[in-house]
Length: 328
Image (cartoon, rainbow, N blue to C red; front, side, top):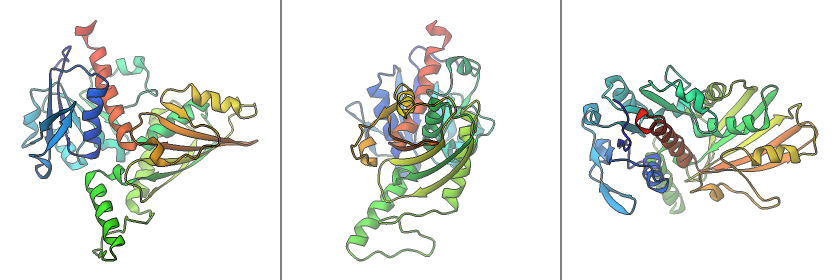
């Protein structure tokens, strides 16, 4: 199906954390479309969400065939459901946000500021696109800006509850409320999310996926060691990065700051100002604080993971629309 000047667009997972951000960004960025249809899994259906100031009904996606008349479908839904839709090949171009927690497969993985227009043009016939994990996007963006193509990089990602979607957000709020009331009771297989930071097998597998995604997004990536932990924050995430100083950077540190300042999608924090995760919530930019040493560069990055994932997905749709023959 070709993309018209104003495509018909579906959002699957419209009631989730990323789905809500997608709907908001579609309106905020003025993405031109002829129809916007909102879907959810059965549990999330028959709700309403705000779309450009209008309350819109969210329908249940009964079958992948429900998407056949659309040009673009955003899959902001659990991986199992997204896989069913992709396997069914219902017709529209599918933008899979559930791919964020997996290593790159045969599906093109692209990101704004990291994938050139020329490289994207080679993918015009692709029917499925994958979204990188927001941490991979942030890390690759910083490494590319600094020209860190070799050497060793150590990073620690701290993911807020929104990185796990609506269910994790709800569980975190409920647990925190129960803890404050001294009545929290956990099942044997349940982890305490309120007032706790932890690393499980899931976080370790996400770290492996992020490392592979960074290598995919960069033409040449350094040796990377990354750890991922869940932190008791509802919205937003943080990333620490320690980089061996690239040989090209020989100044007093201002060279590194300026390279990051002009990189797309990065906002340098004011020197001396405290920088917390909450400062990035609602922003599309990655907010970065820089500390330089004689042989290394340390970064403290905070970002709205749900908004960054939605932004990457919408960028694909915008690029597809711009490259459509009907717009030439």
